[in-house]
Image (cartoon, rainbow, N blue to C red):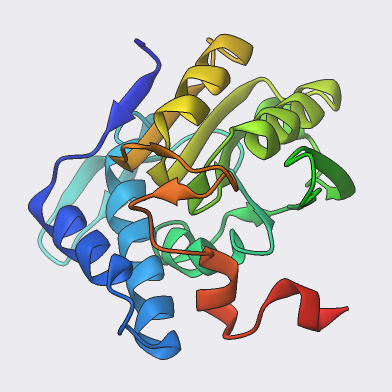
Length: 214
């Protein structure tokens, strides 16, 4: 799977282990998700385009690189993806932000889109889709399909933990999209949860089950 990049940085692995621990509380969990997103983003954005400009330091005139092109767009998949947004904006404070709302049918485990708001000129931007968990792959597949349908061309995806089933499904559906993963776990269980995983990322980030928000 040439479009899948699994991260092996020791700090990422260390923080993911802390995420998995059931004794990790909501506040610490949020901070860890944000920190992991920033570490993963640093790696995923290594190929950003730059251009040279002339500036003057306190010592002399010089020509130095800055980012080129339209500002990237960060698109969290609601709701858990919001936990990764702060880490990405720490790297790209001027990035545009869109949102994609996906919900999962608890019986069929299939996703459905209920909200999609993208920044303007999406076709000219690097788009980074963030979601902590890649289980069946359905939500991410549909999110990327939605972005492409609306004109998005250059897309990268970042997930902290993935199941091999989801990785395989995503790469088949979108072989042209790079997928950055913090860890690829063993499998999905009968309820389509990642094993060993970390439970429900949204519940642990926000401290409340999704069903209680209705």
